[in-house]
Image (cartoon, rainbow, N blue to C red; front, top):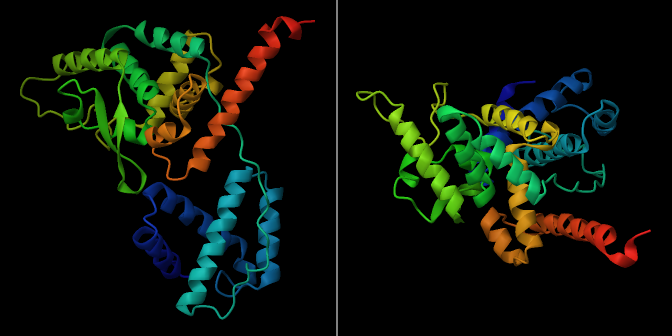
Length: 300
C-alpha cells in the first residue's frame, strides 16, 4: 500500500475540513494501523467487506478505549468514501458496517475547594518556577482555555494587563477569554519574574511561557508534570488533575453558579452546544449529591 493515497486523503482533510494537525496525526496513525491490519487482505484498496468487518471487530478485542476505536472506525470510513469519489475503488467496504453506539463519558472535574488547594500549592512553590505555575493554573481556571491555546499565548497578549484575551481556537475562530483579578495579578507577577530572569542582551521570546525546547514554549506534557506535583502537594490524586481538567472545572463551576449555557459555550469556543451540555450533567450530579448529603430529610 503506497502512502500516496493516505497523504492525498489527509491533504483533503486539512484543506476542505480544516482538520487540526493533532487530528491529522491521529488519522494518519489510524490509517497506517488499518493498512497493517488489512495487509493480508490486499491492503486498504483491495480489502473486501469481510476483511474490513473483521478489522473493525478486532478493535474491541485489542483493549482500545471506546473513543480510540470509534475514531479509527471513523477514519477508515472517511477514507473509503474519499477513495470511492477518487475512483480508487468501485465500492465502499465499510458502508454496511454500523458504528457502535458509545455513551459520552462525563468529564473529570474538581471541586471549588480542590481548585483552591491546587492554586495554594502552586503559589507555595519557590522561585520563578512557582510564579510561572501559579500563572498557568490561574489562567487556565479563570479563562477555560484549551492547553494548546494557553501555551501558545504570545507575550504581547499579556503585556498591558488585559481584562480579557483574544484567543484563536479550533478552526482559526477567535473568541474572548475573560480574566479575573487573581489571574491578572498572577500574570503580572510572572511577567516580572520572566523579565528579571532574561539575559539583558538576549532576544525576548515571543511566547508568554517560553522554554528551551524545540518549540520554544512550554509543552503540554511539561505542564501536566508540574500539575501532578502540585496535586500531590495539595493532597489530591494526580490522576484526577490535568490541564484539561482545569477547563472542565471552569465550565462546571460556571454552570453551578447559574451561568447561561450559551454563554459557557461561547467562552469554551464550542461550535456545537451539545458539546457544552455534557457539563450540565456534571453540575446536576454535584447538586444532587449535595442535596442528598446536606438536606435534613435525606439523612438517615
